[in-house]
Amino acid sequence: MSEAELLAIDLAAVALLAFGLYFPRYHRRDMVVAILGINIGVMAVATALVNAEVSAGVGLGLFGVLSIIRLRSEELTQPDVVFYFVAIAMGVLGGIPIEPSWYTPALMGAMLIALFIGDHPALFRGMQHHQVVLDKAYTDRTALINRLESDLGADVKRVEIKRVDLVRNRTTVEVRYRRG
Image (tube, rainbow, N blue to C red):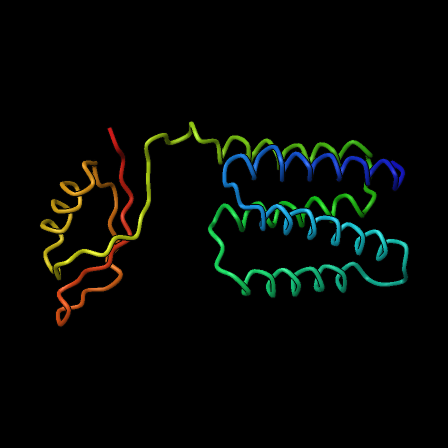
């Protein structure tokens, strides 16, 4: 497959990732820019490395350093991280010709399908996740769950106590619940 064909496939795939999957679900314009930018940047570097006398290990190490720097500069949700890394992976695939030539579009398609299904809003419909600060210090887990179910009007599936402040009489929890 020619470099022009790889470029076209990568551009189509990252456009679908950013504008077809990510933005309609999360509405974060800043992440669309990051997804597009990292994908094109990685693809350009991968293409240059393939045509240069540099080992693949050096290039992949560079990608790892760049991604760590980006991920540490802002708190990202788990879906943000996954979309970000798929953009990186597609950029690498778009910049390195592999044989047989159908592997590249097939692998990009597999990543897009996995995100489409795994992140689809209909999957686990009704499940929600919040950090909640309560105006009472709860040390009894059953009482805490009863309070959360009453306040949220939902079936609490998981509670992770983040902080119990006995002085200020507050409890901070991560709660996962399903509304009926």
